[in-house]
Image: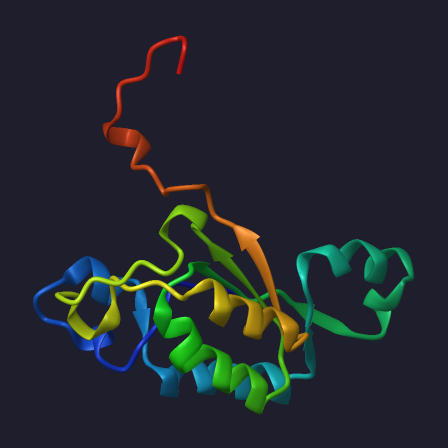
Length: 149
């Protein structure tokens, strides 16, 4: 299951349909986590899947992979506490060149990114695996590249 923003404010932002479409309220995210637990799924990291399938554990357990893209600050503020509450794993795919960027004009923290310290804290919890989601999240559809690029 893939997410972007877990934020109580951006989910209903009438000014930004793109942001609204990428957002989920913490209450809805918590409902998803409860549903996963109630249906007997175990959350896993990507690197655990091969081992679990090779050990034939797929016959005994059901697995789900939770991912949250881009590394926004709201993953630390809203998603991480809920993952801890339900003892569930997730992989956060961050954009290294944007980590820690803070825009004081950002509405509802939507354009702000988690810091290296916050990412380290989440990773050290054992519940969060950090991956790379490109270095700068370039919009490739709008770029014209030359062979050397």
